[in-house]
Length: 288
Image 1 (cartoon, rainbow, N blue to C red):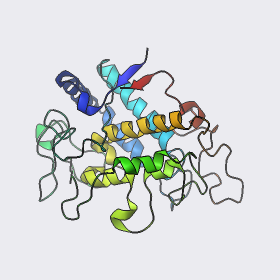
Image 2: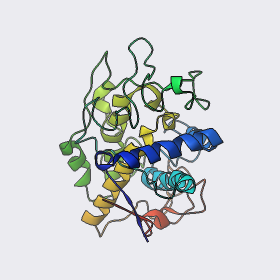
Image 3: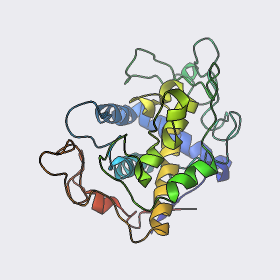
């Protein structure tokens, strides 16, 4: 029977507590840090050589769908009632609304070093020391809304601009793709600075701190953010039933993307699964 992922704004006090406790237990066991390291390892950009799977590629959405499921399976081994909630940042847009409450993820970082001081993931609690990172910072950091150069979260209109594109992805299958649902949702735009950060990318920038870069999994909001993206992919699939993951076949020899992206029926590292197998939720979960 499929279990349910709920909006973070609909969680009961008990559901919040059990979600937080399960995350903290994974951290204590050393399991959580393996997820951080995995995301760092697969954070490959356009300019780097080799295969891209997690970002700047068509497999951005199926890769994170499986990544979410792996974390959720680990959480449910701790507490079978727990599922990953989603954060709809088109509705909960304040730095003091959910999920930034003391009983869930805690709030913003302090001004001088962006260190999160409250909530269950504050360094002072002793339960959330950052061990896998691209810097030497041991405490969770946030800069909600970017204090020195403010930006806003994406809007419903921004989401709709991606949702109405009926094609999943287009050549050159990277951050420069001018159309296609995947790149519009992932949020790589032209130009410089905040104008080039859209949808998914803009949320990472809005949260700031630990959410910037490959080690973004160190902030538990990563999972709530990507659960919402997964929900949006599901809604896109329902709206455009005749369209599927692209490319259907690997880019040909001579293409700049040859052996750099995963086609529909190719294995998606590090799993023994294909994007084709991850286009649906398999009856494992549903969204409320």
